[in-house]
Length: 314
Ligand SMILES: NC(=O)c1ccc[n+]([C@@H]2O[C@H](COP(=O)([O-])OP(=O)(O)OC[C@H]3O[C@@H](n4cnc5c(N)ncnc54)[C@H](OP(=O)(O)O)[C@@H]3O)[C@@H](O)[C@H]2O)c1
Image (tube, rainbow, N blue to C red; front, side, top):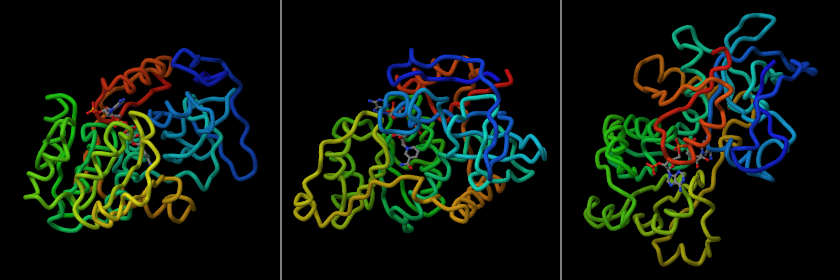
């Protein structure tokens, strides 16, 4: 089978298309033919490593959708190592069945970022009707889905983006206000009549985290769920008191989907939103498997919107 392999950690050049034997499923695993692979920012952290995701030499990636080879059942997954490939051996408990009304491609596009957006808005900080919240990088994969889910919860979204095209997409997803990154805390204060936001959802990290603390209302929630611009400086907890008794969380989907039951419940909630048409997933780029390097480069260069997929059968 063809797969995207990395021999060592490093830049995009370490990603190579290789011809490898099909994986042999261990006990509790099944062989899955991959139809679409999800590209995520975490794949860049995994490639750059060490200490994140699979240790090289390995096939990279964790997300996708396809069919179980023996049964033909359509399934999706957000946490199966070695997913940038034509076949994966997957733990049965990490696979979720795809409902009839959802295409395999849409399931691959939505499963990881959609479940993330869902737990962020429902659990990390459960959005209340009328809340103002900040969604950074709102035209990105998580950002577009999170903006829509916050709106479904009755919240109001202040979105940040870096271009006019991205601003239009954020507005299309329901953002009430779209602003740039420069001086965003002050803009949030203006928009919220001096109060500040109930929560800041921050997947950008280094360049936004500190200012985000200044955008929060008293007892507001800083949810740092990623670091596309790099890790923020360590935070002295003593800063949280004078800033308004703030809460800070550094969550991961792995916690919120750590058992098959939690995974099933989250995926079911997500698929219901997709099937009912309440949630739309934007596929911003489709690449043949061998162009995985290009996909990661485009993502890191902020040249993408919505979800990127690799299509092993193209
Ligand atoms: N904790 C979890 O459970 C979890 C799960 C999934 C994803 N994540 C995190 O969520 C974040 C978004 O992931 P994604 O896959 O959906 O990616 P994405 O948002 O589609 O892409 C990253 C976006 O971040 C913005 N950005 C701002 N500064 C950047 C910089 N210096 N370099 C690169 N991008 C920058 C860009 O949007 P603008 O150009 O508009 O600024 C860019 O398009 C990542 O940090 C990822 O690790 C966390």
